[in-house]
Length: 513
Image (cartoon, rainbow, N blue to C red; front, side):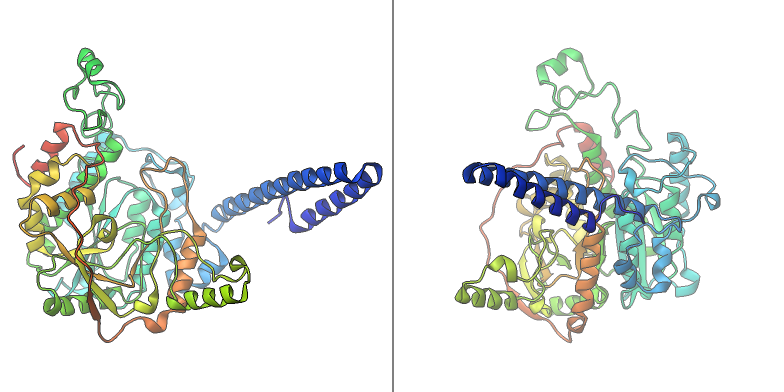
């Protein structure tokens, strides 16, 4: 790869700047010289940084466009993935793909290939066809679902590059051959379908959300020209006679389909799995819910079963198990970092030079708690990742469908928090691992306008798990109790004032609006 700007060129720039500074200092006085030096240094620094940033971007683009089709063929990344799993990181050549749906979303998440787009009616037909067949792949190899198996449901949008790594992490998990993976899609995409149909390490199934923006691009639940614009005043909306003029949210805004879709999809998906799929009709165990940007540890299935066993004794009233937790800093080595910082302070050395590496993404807490679990109130912002619950708990959700479906918040987890706070006789309790086995690798979602894919973050998670492998698969769990916090009644985020959303949500579980 030819770089337009290298570290050698940077040295040449610095050398040239030094020579010019010396020449200036000979001609001018000391004070003028110092000001000139500072100015030249600043300009040079910013120029070098800008060009080095361009190089990094160019390198990334060229890596993603390698002729062999590797989507994220970073050497350090591939070294951490077994050779037999590289196929999940490779795109099929276009000549082997008869047609592909071109979907809205981040362009960088799809390989740039010429394809024939599917229209909405064709997509609806394919969705209905797939949902009615209820095909389970690899059942002939791994046998029917048993009650002591595990059902894992993954909500998928269009982020295929993240999904590839989610699949790789699942493939490496111990016990995955006994699981059933159900992929729930809100976009019909042939490339994603091909990727999932390649999976050969366990049973798989695909279900398709039938009320998506893609399948209804010009009408509800999508957006039509007769809908009210988001920021129009209610008085103006009434004059305009747009469809939903009487139903803005609590902040005076009208619905946006790209936001309402996620809550609808989550609700539909859970109902579809618990109430409508033949393959799980006799299954009474927990169902684990993941997303297409979650990365699992090799012992996540083992830990979930260990949690089940421990929870039955320590917290029979717990409704949910949680394998993931959001935190703002990465530190897998617990108190070791604090000890280092104490030494640094005593010796009065700049902490910035010796502090162990960290990054600001929400990853994991200290792994010194690798064999610890905590009993806590369920809090949506902490316990919504890697959540597992059974049919009995789902029935509690459905019994509170009015609260969930009419709560003015487009987030499913905030709506579930409202169920816990306002509908149940006792709030949800959760049994959560202190050192999570599910990690969030995607920093882009519906709130981000720019396309993004952070290879470095995935490499760090892989190296992290490799470095602490000896702590995985603990024999038992040490259980602690989190302090009980005062009940906080939160005002929703809005985006869910439209009565049509309420009615659709209720119809999904056969309730009347």
